Amino acid sequence: MSTEKMRTEFEAWVEANFGLSVRRNPAGAYQSFGVYAAWEAWQASRAAVVVELPSKWNDPTNSNMQSWDSGIDDARMAIEAAGLKVAP
Image (cartoon, rainbow, N blue to C red; front, side, top):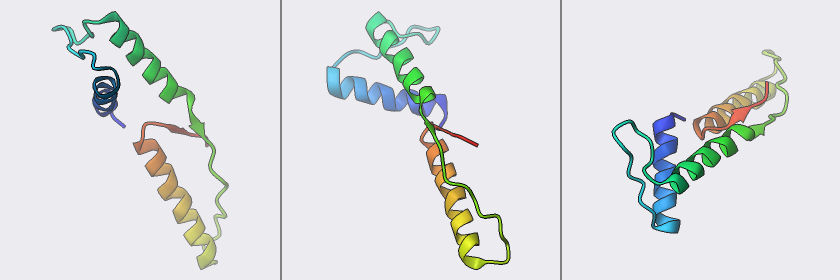
């Protein structure tokens, strides 16, 4: 997930839950220290989550195992698109 997409989600959450202003100064920093601190915590919380997926079979001769491996790849892409990390 791009930083801007994560920031958009964060700002929508702040406005919906706290009604705080998410205005930024010309340099891009939040004008409210509370919003700035929440943004830093939001990013750190996303960075701290690491999802460990099951192992792949890596057997191209078995179609069931190929489907399993494809599902692992799809899950990895979806998790990373949400801004989270996947353990190798």
